[in-house]
Image (tube, rainbow, N blue to C red; front, side, top):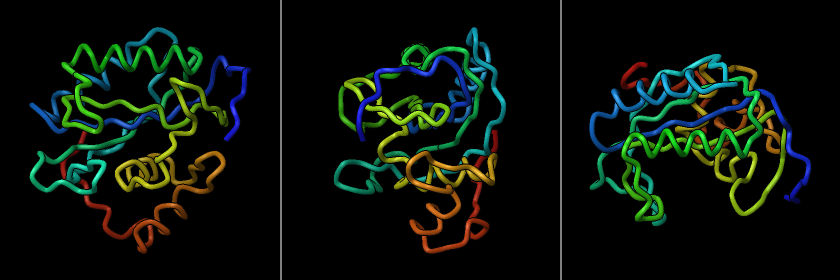
Length: 178
């Protein structure tokens, strides 16, 4: 993917939320409230939360605490890098530390898409480079946007089906709700 120097200044965005330490449900609820309270950001939808095993660089880690994952959609007047900074500040306010790559965390907020933007720089790649490989991103996203498209990759329902081998309505387990 080539880098684009022009940054979109506003548009719809998809944010993945996850937590596997502490009171996961309370942390995710606080994060959703904090996202909704961001100046220039309008929260438009929040999925249910699904429980998934921890994913580490070597694969699934059944010894690590399980995650609660979900997706939120927003309309942002902030440009992508400013939105990313705001999401990182919410993570930090909720005790996120970055000691270990893909380590356990109190809160993880990933900017998945921003409008139709496809860009890559040292801080941000859009769309998120592993979103198409993550059931825990695709499934909740599909719940709130049945016709969603991952820019450059295709329809979310087709990506989920290719990933899991199931139709998007199968296995739609939602462990804990909003």
